[in-house]
Length: 159
Image (cartoon, rainbow, N blue to C red; front, top):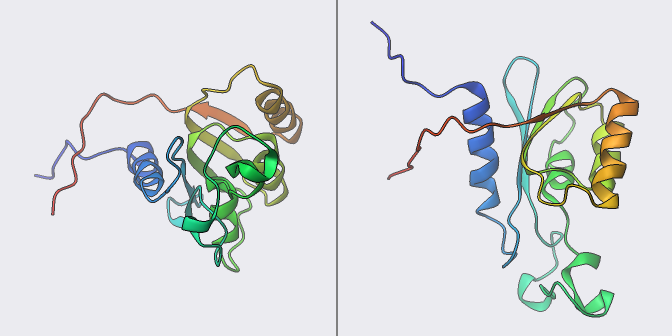
Protein backbone atom coordinates (compact mmCIF):
# COMPACT_ATOMS: atom_id res chain seq x y z
CA UNK A 1 0.00 0.00 0.00
CA UNK A 2 1.35 3.45 -0.87
CA UNK A 3 2.12 6.20 1.65
CA UNK A 4 -0.75 8.61 2.31
CA UNK A 5 1.02 11.32 4.31
CA UNK A 6 2.98 12.81 1.40
CA UNK A 7 2.95 16.59 0.87
CA UNK A 8 0.63 18.27 -1.64
CA UNK A 9 1.86 20.02 -4.79
CA UNK A 10 1.21 23.39 -3.14
CA UNK A 11 3.22 22.38 -0.05
CA UNK A 12 6.02 21.10 -2.27
CA UNK A 13 6.32 24.17 -4.51
CA UNK A 14 5.86 26.69 -1.69
CA UNK A 15 8.48 24.69 0.21
CA UNK A 16 10.89 25.10 -2.72
CA UNK A 17 10.13 28.83 -2.70
CA UNK A 18 10.77 29.11 1.04
CA UNK A 19 13.96 27.07 0.76
CA UNK A 20 15.20 29.31 -2.08
CA UNK A 21 14.55 32.35 0.15
CA UNK A 22 17.17 30.99 2.54
CA UNK A 23 19.82 31.77 -0.12
CA UNK A 24 19.08 35.50 0.17
CA UNK A 25 21.73 37.56 1.92
CA UNK A 26 19.26 40.36 2.70
CA UNK A 27 19.37 40.85 6.49
CA UNK A 28 15.73 41.97 6.66
CA UNK A 29 13.63 40.27 4.00
CA UNK A 30 14.26 36.91 2.37
CA UNK A 31 11.99 36.08 -0.55
CA UNK A 32 11.93 32.98 -2.74
CA UNK A 33 10.06 32.14 -5.93
CA UNK A 34 9.38 28.93 -7.84
CA UNK A 35 7.81 28.83 -11.31
CA UNK A 36 5.92 25.66 -12.20
CA UNK A 37 4.49 24.37 -15.49
CA UNK A 38 0.89 23.29 -15.98
CA UNK A 39 2.00 19.67 -15.50
CA UNK A 40 3.76 20.37 -12.16
CA UNK A 41 7.35 20.58 -13.41
CA UNK A 42 9.68 23.18 -11.88
CA UNK A 43 10.73 25.59 -14.61
CA UNK A 44 12.80 28.01 -12.55
CA UNK A 45 13.65 29.21 -9.05
CA UNK A 46 14.90 32.55 -7.71
CA UNK A 47 15.51 34.56 -4.57
CA UNK A 48 16.11 38.22 -3.81
CA UNK A 49 19.72 39.34 -4.11
CA UNK A 50 22.23 41.50 -5.89
CA UNK A 51 22.72 41.05 -9.64
CA UNK A 52 25.30 38.50 -10.78
CA UNK A 53 28.77 40.01 -10.83
CA UNK A 54 27.99 42.56 -8.11
CA UNK A 55 29.84 41.70 -4.91
CA UNK A 56 27.32 41.33 -2.06
CA UNK A 57 29.94 42.63 0.37
CA UNK A 58 30.37 45.89 -1.57
CA UNK A 59 26.65 46.61 -1.96
CA UNK A 60 24.40 48.41 0.53
CA UNK A 61 21.80 46.40 2.48
CA UNK A 62 20.28 49.36 4.35
CA UNK A 63 16.55 50.03 4.23
CA UNK A 64 16.70 53.77 4.94
CA UNK A 65 18.76 56.67 3.67
CA UNK A 66 19.57 58.14 0.28
CA UNK A 67 18.50 55.86 -2.57
CA UNK A 68 22.05 54.90 -3.57
CA UNK A 69 22.88 54.08 0.06
CA UNK A 70 20.03 51.53 0.29
CA UNK A 71 19.39 48.12 -1.22
CA UNK A 72 16.37 49.32 -3.19
CA UNK A 73 18.30 50.65 -6.18
CA UNK A 74 20.19 47.39 -6.58
CA UNK A 75 18.41 44.23 -5.35
CA UNK A 76 16.83 41.95 -7.94
CA UNK A 77 13.58 40.50 -6.56
CA UNK A 78 12.98 36.75 -6.34
CA UNK A 79 10.22 36.77 -8.96
CA UNK A 80 12.36 38.60 -11.52
CA UNK A 81 15.33 36.34 -10.79
CA UNK A 82 13.14 33.27 -11.36
CA UNK A 83 11.86 34.74 -14.64
CA UNK A 84 15.40 35.59 -15.78
CA UNK A 85 16.79 32.19 -14.68
CA UNK A 86 14.34 30.22 -16.85
CA UNK A 87 16.54 30.07 -19.93
CA UNK A 88 14.65 29.52 -23.19
CA UNK A 89 11.57 27.97 -21.55
CA UNK A 90 8.20 29.63 -22.15
CA UNK A 91 6.35 30.57 -18.98
CA UNK A 92 2.98 30.93 -20.69
CA UNK A 93 0.28 29.37 -18.49
CA UNK A 94 2.65 28.63 -15.63
CA UNK A 95 2.19 29.26 -11.89
CA UNK A 96 4.44 31.33 -9.65
CA UNK A 97 4.84 30.30 -6.02
CA UNK A 98 6.33 33.18 -4.04
CA UNK A 99 6.82 33.78 -0.34
CA UNK A 100 5.83 37.49 -0.53
CA UNK A 101 3.15 39.10 -2.71
CA UNK A 102 4.82 40.66 -5.78
CA UNK A 103 5.57 44.37 -6.08
CA UNK A 104 4.26 46.34 -9.06
CA UNK A 105 7.55 46.05 -10.98
CA UNK A 106 7.59 42.26 -10.66
CA UNK A 107 3.87 42.16 -11.51
CA UNK A 108 4.68 43.72 -14.90
CA UNK A 109 7.28 41.02 -15.63
CA UNK A 110 4.93 38.28 -14.41
CA UNK A 111 2.19 39.47 -16.76
CA UNK A 112 4.52 40.02 -19.72
CA UNK A 113 5.96 36.48 -19.60
CA UNK A 114 2.51 34.86 -19.44
CA UNK A 115 2.38 33.50 -15.88
CA UNK A 116 -1.30 32.79 -15.23
CA UNK A 117 -1.41 32.37 -11.43
CA UNK A 118 0.47 33.76 -8.44
CA UNK A 119 0.34 31.72 -5.23
CA UNK A 120 1.79 33.80 -2.41
CA UNK A 121 2.50 33.05 1.23
CA UNK A 122 2.17 36.47 2.82
CA UNK A 123 1.19 39.99 1.82
CA UNK A 124 2.84 42.13 4.48
CA UNK A 125 2.67 45.23 2.27
CA UNK A 126 -1.07 44.91 1.55
CA UNK A 127 -2.62 48.34 1.29
CA UNK A 128 0.50 50.00 -0.16
CA UNK A 129 0.29 51.65 -3.55
CA UNK A 130 2.73 49.10 -5.02
CA UNK A 131 0.58 46.13 -4.00
CA UNK A 132 -2.61 47.91 -5.08
CA UNK A 133 -1.01 48.49 -8.49
CA UNK A 134 0.03 44.82 -8.70
CA UNK A 135 -3.48 43.64 -7.88
CA UNK A 136 -5.03 46.01 -10.40
CA UNK A 137 -2.70 44.82 -13.17
CA UNK A 138 -3.19 41.15 -12.25
CA UNK A 139 -6.99 41.58 -12.32
CA UNK A 140 -6.87 43.39 -15.67
CA UNK A 141 -4.55 40.76 -17.20
CA UNK A 142 -6.50 37.81 -15.78
CA UNK A 143 -3.69 36.59 -13.51
CA UNK A 144 -5.23 34.59 -10.68
CA UNK A 145 -4.04 35.49 -7.16
CA UNK A 146 -4.22 32.83 -4.47
CA UNK A 147 -3.00 33.07 -0.91
CA UNK A 148 -1.27 29.91 0.23
CA UNK A 149 -2.80 28.53 3.40
CA UNK A 150 -0.28 26.39 5.30
CA UNK A 151 -1.55 22.96 6.32
CA UNK A 152 0.16 23.24 9.71
CA UNK A 153 2.37 20.28 8.84
CA UNK A 154 5.97 20.72 9.98
CA UNK A 155 8.48 19.71 7.34
CA UNK A 156 12.09 19.26 8.43
CA UNK A 157 15.01 18.81 6.08
CA UNK A 158 17.75 16.65 7.52
CA UNK A 159 20.94 15.39 5.95
